[in-house]
Image 1 (cartoon, one colour):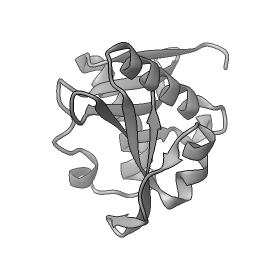
Image 2: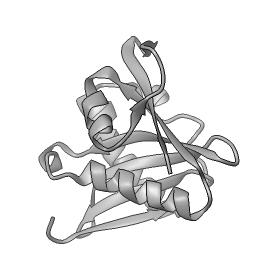
Image 3: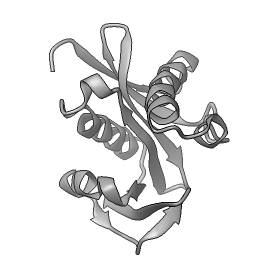
Image 4: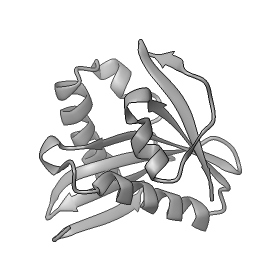
Length: 145
C-alpha cells in the first residue's frame, strides 16, 4: 500500500500510537471497556508494531514475552477505513521477523473463533480447543519461527 510505513518498537510514542488505534477499534467500535482493553501488559517491555499512513497510526499489534523462547501477539487491530488492505498480515510478519531476530522460537496468539481463518492463512496452526475469553469463543494458534 502506498505511503504506509511500519515501525516496530517499544518507544512511548509507539505505544501511544497503538493505544490510539485500540481506542477506536476495541473501545469505541467493539465496545470493550477501557479497564479490559488496557491491561497490565502495556509496559515498557511490550513491543508494538504500528502501520502509519503519513503520521496517522492505522494498524497495530502488541508483542509480549512469555518466556525465553516464546512470545504472544495480542491486540491486533486496524482502523475500519484501512481494513482489507493486508495491513494486519504485514504487522504479523514484522513482529515475527522481530521475534526471530531476537531469538524467540514460537509465536502464540489467542484468536477469536471469528478471526481464525485470517491467522490460518498467515501460516498459524491450531493449538487448543475452543475456550472463552470475555464470553467470546476463542482458540489459540501458534507458529514456529
